Length: 395
Image 1 (cartoon, rainbow, N blue to C red):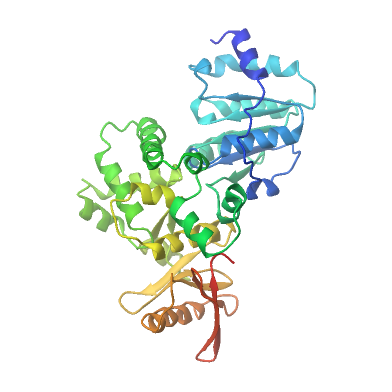
Image 2 (cartoon, rainbow, N blue to C red):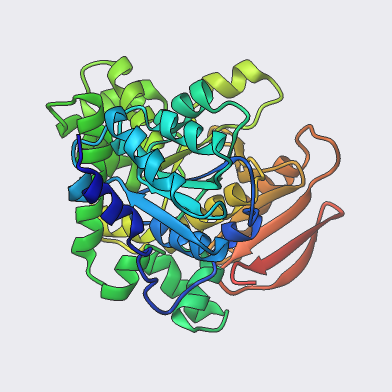
């Protein structure tokens, strides 16, 4: 058990100060200033969850917090919860409670539930989607609101860097990515260390993996090949992973740790969506670049990765569509068919627009808007009588 004085000292420390320049996160606008449900912030490590937690606690007024990665709290468990609760009971009734990286403490959901029963506003962060989902579902069904935090998007990068929207700043962001700590230091080794840290702490340690060579190879391969469909069988053969089942688990672990995100293939049939190979995208372009073995510039793939992340953040549920060696549309949503192309040229126009028109005509509630997203071009075209809008991503 941890001493009461130690817990009291940690609990009463003010939330860490936000390093300038301070950025108002887009996701914060959707989080209610007061709620009887636990506010859950999830996302990859070092994407700014702790900073956002500090901002929200400051917005809530009187507040206290516990960072479960604090070395003074090493070994904390359910035996310490009564002490924490008694210390919280001494605080004003309006004081909110923040719990940072809750997956580090076993049965943390019991503490959250007890705080909610005391009518405290509770905000917590975590870095493992599956773990949080299982434990929230088991103990806090209907008593939590979940919000995914990711590295800075383009608008947040502009706020942080004090830059104006345009081609130059877009290219910078597509290269640097949006991890706040990396943007301050501009050291690629920090992004490589971050990847190793996530694999070691959030995957290997949590799942008892003693050998991570195949997992690391799979991670680097998917980061280097974003936007390309891969079946589990193909990944297994290409990377000499012992079994397809092992590959399946590895992919699931990478998604749970928010490193990789899957984009399914569009199909009206549920079975076809499940069976068809998905495409995979990286949580951040800077992390992808710093850890990719490919040395050639790939502006088009970075732009496509960024568009996927933005669609996902907007709740658009993007899917890709196409037929092998015939046509392909990068993203299909309920409202839009989207082709991502760094530059639309006379050489690639026919291929890109043919896939776009096929994607727009796929079954849906209504005819989809046809968009080509580029680095700098603007245009309005008509293909087979259908309007196509060409727009730069920075707009």
